[in-house]
Length: 294
Image (cartoon, rainbow, N blue to C red; front, side, top):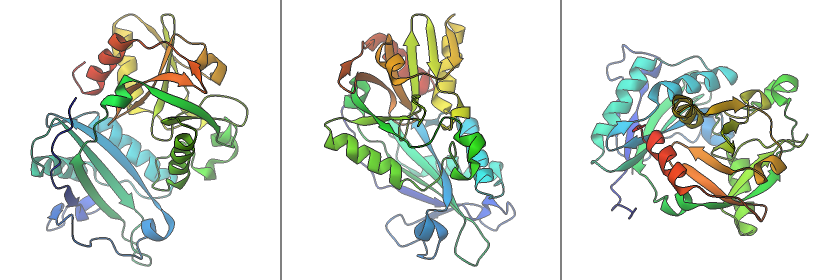
């Protein structure tokens, strides 16, 4: 797909996230002007959570699951639940404020706010999506040790495994390591040897008529994309499961993908140099599901 001419991004502040009676629950702001205080906890400590919502031909996908996951992540870092009705209205206003494009990426951020204020900060940022056509054709992936066991949620809940926090330095470092090794993406592996997830994606593996993903109990983010794909696969008579898999299971499978709300379905062409089969037709089917057309 050819990339579209980018439009200026849209920034929507949401002061009503915790006060639906605010004079302006959401407020269109200048995306090029300073908006964030340097003393906001997200700037000083990365203390906040976020969600990225894919919008295709003006229609957002999986809004309910994304907002529900935001609430779960907020709870994990001891932030109260925001007003979801306000967030939904602000999301639509953000989409409406952006010129129509085929693919729009909208990020919702919720932080602990300015130090000492006790008031969380919340905003949407929308921009024309990147051109993901090359990744949707296939990606070379390497495995990297995440350094924690698959029991991390049970043994060390304070590590916030499975929460979508704004502390993304490790994830970005993993991407840079992949690029240094000539790959495009990473599959994290637990300290006890199980395949987990990508830095910004969920693992999906096919073995015959069975499709599997890593269970959230292993410390991965509960995937909204894989939930949609699972629903479509069940309707077509396939078996789906959440189960622990080793990198060898993935490498020896009948196909594997890294799924996300913006990039959609990226088939793994190689894992640590081992070639995997790629089913372009099935990948296209997953893409349609993740665009909300399934």
